Length: 118
Image 1 (cartoon, helix red, strand yellow):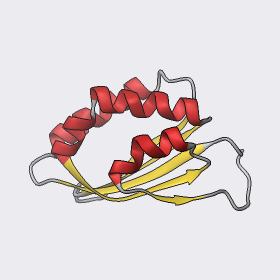
Image 2 (image 1 turned 180 degrees about the horizontal axis):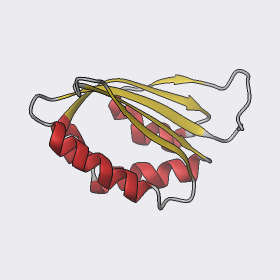
Image 3 (image 1 turned 60 degrees about the vertical axis):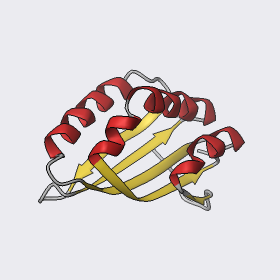
Image 4 (image 1 turned 135 degrees about the vertical axis):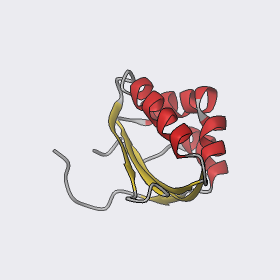
């Protein structure tokens, strides 16, 4: 658990963009499922389909960078067209490479304090 990096992304889906966002979500889930270092990749949507939450967790910083670089290359432009991020919290032990890569998205950081994972 000490090497993992995860994050919670929350946001609002732009009016008229749910169908495009849903299609993008399906593509992103399929693509991310092929990344061996991805431990969790879960999307949630509000009942009225106006807000979303994504929970992601990666085995280590290298796995995190693999995902983030793929996201930037393949999906970030479409993602930003469909939604507005309202919260981005990074958990765990992101190294400087990860912090530099995601820093432009305005994250807050929380280090591991206690607990366990199964």
